[in-house]
Image (cartoon, rainbow, N blue to C red; front, side):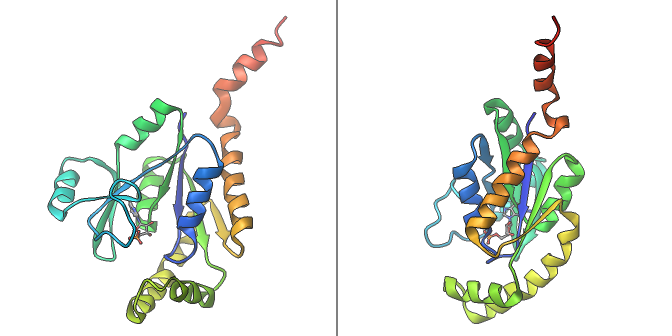
Length: 202
Ligand code: 5GP
């Protein structure tokens, strides 16, 4: 059975780094590459972090019911393609989704068994410092991201786990532990328990 792990966080909270480390450190995880209409940034390669498409193509995909969930974030469309679940099932993987709070809400309704993790920066001040240190955005964009972060953070109550990212190595260890722990929940491994019990029947 495929488990869906949903990870959300305000921009600048260290989510991308944590997700990369999770994928590198834990086997059998498939990252869901989202579709988006936003412009390609710096070193991004189409098909790796995102599949970049035109608005009209995205809208055609919405009309064709191709998305498990989709949302508008900062004026652009973002969506998770349905195909990811079949792909995960076929390869025996669990899925990792990096999606915003709206998408997480939609998916949790559709897949109640999904595991949701919210990553919080330790404070507004730290978030601001990280956004400035990245050197990617002008002041007004940073101000907007900070305002949006305040709104997103209020949604933490909808998540199963809240990870305060004070230290990257520590957060990495905790996130991996969440995935590994969820994988041995009784309800997820019922099919593996039967054969073990069988061996005790003499
Ligand atoms: P960015 O443009 O900075 O990469 O992402 C902006 C926001 O869009 C992030 O919060 C990210 O998690 C979210 N996002 C990325 N892909 C998806 C998606 O497929 N669906 C939804 N709902 N949000 C997404």
